[in-house]
Amino acid sequence: MRTVNAWRLMRFGISFGALYAVWIVFTASVDAFSLFTGAIGSLAIAALTHDIFIAQHEASLRAFVPRPLVLVGFLAFLVYSMYLSSVQMLVALIRGRANPRVVHFRTRLKTDLARMVLANSITFTPGTITLDLNDDHLTVHWFLATTRHSRAAGDIVKGKFEDRLRRVWS
Image (cartoon, rainbow, N blue to C red):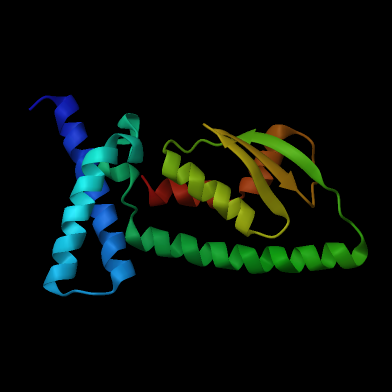
């Protein structure tokens, strides 16, 4: 089997698996008719959309399947960061020390999924909103800016999210 066909089959399989898992979660039914209907529908949709659902340059399984224990650690760190950032925002607002800026920086994450999770993690933490994610460039509104330098701002805003996400999808 040629490599191109193997990657196409891999993308089809990942698309089917993801669609079928979503079907099972949303229907919350494991009776035979529901499972059969979900399988047929997932096969049809995966056949039509696997080229769109997963880009050809991200066809490896490692780009989509996270390391579970590291993912749980990342999610715990995200919740901790959200609470810490909430307290920092409260203190800054009470003291009147807001310094809003729009900063641009790059990420070193390789997969689109990891970049999307990074952008959403930045947005989830109070005081930052990801305005744009274009390939590896992020544009973020940062409410408590401490620098205008792009690289320094990126290191502060990304914090340890980027390093932890790299370990989740490595």
